[in-house]
Image (cartoon, rainbow, N blue to C red; front, side, top):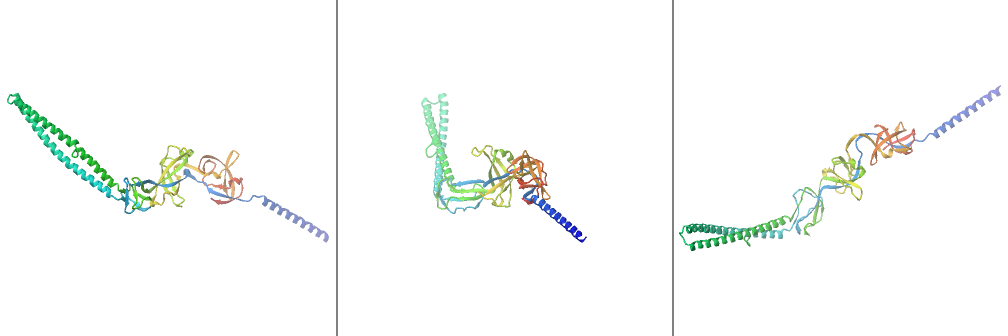
Length: 393
């Protein structure tokens, strides 16, 4: 009996051990068959009222810029302003030696005064000749009346006529001398005035004047240097406002209109933002690139944005609320477009309907709701129900 009991317990122990091993192996197999969590990056879906159209890159240039040179030739005298100097409108930026132009202006002024004296003398002669002509006319009229009354002879009438003709000739000569004579006429005076005016203008051009408030961006002349008329001495720019020229493809042209608000950023000034506005959309395409030029302006307090810096322009035009997601979040399998959302460390596939694409953003018309957590990287290798390890993008 004792041997039977011992055999019974041995058999029970063996059955229990085999069963334990079987369940342990099954549990290990289940664990080995379960997929490993996939690392993904996610974002929270949001509805927005501004189009994502933006991200256009251009170069900062002054809103106004001018190359400045003297309108006459000469030698630069005195100090020349350094680059970076702020100047006010009407400020003298540089001067030429005015000696030659001053002498010319003084000579022209003297010639004008001489012409004035000559014309005054010619006017006096004209006045005298006019008075003599008027008296001769009166004498002739009086003698003619007496002749008709048979009170004087024909010889006296002829003599009065001769005196009138002589007086008339002298009067015409005085008129001609006053108007068109040589050295003492109205024409001479007007010519002298024109020369004097031109000389004074040239003298004024020996000073280079700032046409607007700005900053000296470039200096191209030095004190003592002889420059020709029109040779640039400075480049100045108005940096209170800056301009950015960007290009867009024809397919995106409708996304930009004059007056649209924009945000301007620059990688050279991280973390800063300048509100601006589209001021011009050029109507003609660039035949070389097939793109359209857009001009954007923004205020630049403190002149933080400098000419030549890289700037990025993003549109802030208000639109009806819409959901926009990165194109990289989409997975196309067959005819359907799918995205994956994450809930409780698990991915779930959702079929969506998409709209237009702007840059790397695409509009989701249906199938995705604000507030959902969307997989934006790693979705290509996911299947419905896969576990995930979330990483915020």
